[in-house]
Image 1 (tube, rainbow, N blue to C red):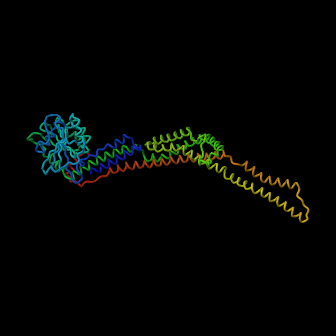
Image 2: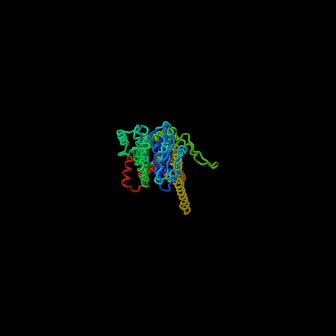
Image 3: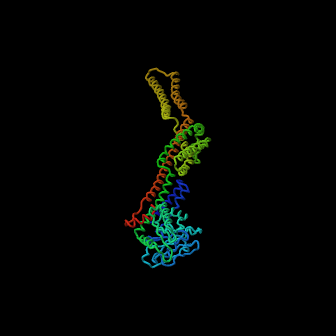
Length: 539
């Protein structure tokens, strides 16, 4: 079952690394989401079946932890004495058939003492004597902290003189919900009922409704001692069902911690509603920016239009080189336009940031459009001005000019035909004896008619020829509008992609949270076991 939690931790780490790289969360948040302890009692063993119950004696210096373990073992397996700290190493007491195969690297073998037994009744329990937690040696404290995640049941041992130890209480409050707890008031032969009642009250404040406290004595022949009850209670817990219950509870507590930490970072991603409002923010900002750019482009467009009108031939491909020149002395996209566009994007990013949305991913994606904008305007303006110069004037103007060009051919030809017809008819009638002659007036009028029918369309075409400057101006304006529209759509696509990525981030973290809320269910316990565990656990 531990692997389920480990998988959630790995998913969280992968998401945190990816989200930090993309800018959705900061490096500090990613670090916090990568610092999860996936260690459990189950991780010490292979997943091939049931495992023993891991029980540890924990407490301060001189309270008698090692003495209790030695009494349990019936032999001196743990070192005892008056030297402080008394316990510097971890002592494991277990059945010879039990093997811990996955000892973590941070649990040094040289700090572990192993004692084995052949008692089949204790086969399903591993007893551990922990170093003195209140030791001045920092390595002892670190060793306790390294072992704690691998413990099922903590037997917290105190003495009448030291049951209010501050260091131990801080540990109890920090680790209380992760383990099952039994309490031993050792050296009871020197204790008083008032101390027992006070200790019980302290445990109640820590979260235990009805803590289980055993009074034991370290003498060779103790009287009125509850050690056997402690031993019987622990042995009753060493069943597969109870161990599974403890595992599931421990895993669920870890999942709840993971869920809480993920939920605490979700607000930093911003809400879906805020992200959905982003396109509207862009439309409002782009309207202001586009209006400013169009006003500022009026003069550059006029200058470029004049240049194109005077250098229209520069747009014609040179047959010799296969190249053409389209350079202009006045660029549409200058430093002023670039600054206004940058300001517009920055104001948009600021407005998005004010909505509580991470803007780092948006900045990264908008960096491309900052570089592409001048190229888009340049390409669209050149394309539009080429089309405008290739088809000068408007539709009606071009249709009228076509008609005049047709008249330039048809009218002189019609005049010539008419004059020829008149000459032929006069010649024909004169042959018939009809005396009729064409005079000088006919020749002059005929010449004038032919000249007028040819010159009139010629002068009309000359005078009605479209202005290259106006055509270029119209093309540049059209190209500018097309370029601005393309920039608007490019940014809109970036925003849509940004919204989709945000939704994916929310879905991924939501999926991990949902998995934290699910888990396996153990088999039903007996009422006796339920009651016992209820008293040992902090709800």
